[in-house]
Amino acid sequence: MDDSSFGPRLSGEFDFTLLFEHAFLHIVPSICMILMVPYHIYKIIKGPVLVRPGTLLWLKLSAAVAIAAIQLTSVVLWYKSPLNSPAAQAASILSFLGALGTIIIGYSSHTHFFQPIFFLAFYLIVTLLFDLVTVYSYWRRDSLHAVARLACALPPLKLILIALEEVSKRSLVVSKEAQDACTNETVAGFWNRSTFAWVNPLLLFGFRHRIKNNHLPDIGVQFDAEAKHLAFKQQWDKQDKKDKYALLKACIFSDPWPYIYIVLPRLFIVGLRVSEPFLLQDIVDTVSGSSHDNLPPQQKRTSLILAVALVFIGKAVTSIFSQTLVNVTNY
Image 1 (cartoon, rainbow, N blue to C red):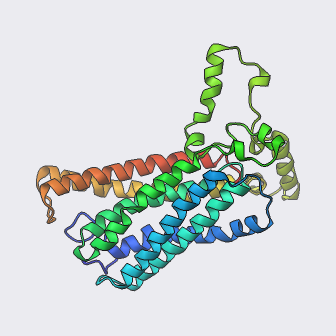
Image 2 (spheres, rainbow, N blue to C red):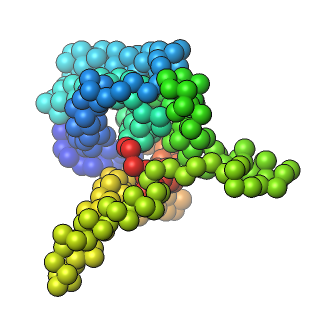
Image 3 (cartoon, one colour):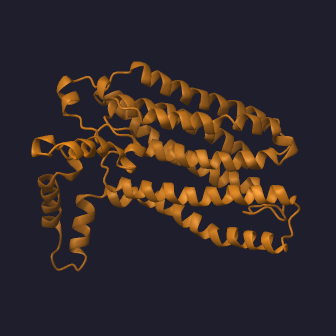
């Protein structure tokens, strides 16, 4: 089995085949990003500007443009590579288009939403993990060292962009009324919201003082009971009451986004769980000395440690993300 086969595992090596990586670690995430772009272009053209640009936006765009420049350079290097293939060309081009999508959605997320777009955070986190796998694979191919050196810059840049997305935009909100109405939760980023770090100021205040109703922040519109009831009632009135699935249909149609949001993270969780038995088998083979690959022992141990970190950190991140998205109405 060589890199032109689907794999996913490269025969006798602790690595994926390049075809598998190009298909699932590059093409699939890039297509997901590209499909999200038209909505945000429409939002930029037609939607109101809620947040001023400021230095924060230019820092975000600088990191996003740097990622796009690296991906564009990667397209050129792949065309000159001895391991070039139709899948490699498609993956490099779509990754570049996905990077352009990151610029567009990053701009839309900053200026047209109070809260950062959670899809962008998820895309950056997942592709950062994929980039680490890709860098490892590229370094192990002698003819891809130039591409590998270039790819090494992607994880730090994405990490910087993720950190910038966590910075509060409250002071940049255009409307003074909206700025006063924004709570810590409203402007919280993905990690801030996922770990409930935005609650810490309230908990600290409650530790020293008695909390009253006027100290509590407003709940988000996604939790407005009156609006939820109205949306459900409208759907319930449309249903055939004799249908045994009437209640289920009314629930889904009245608030479909929580059901849609969790699909992609759950698919990632399934993939990571399926990979666990293969990883455990490799660990057992290495410990027992029955491994048949050609890796030196030290490199094998390092590879297993990185694989364990990737699988279990990936599971933690996707689990947190899927649970958080259920409570989010703007993606």
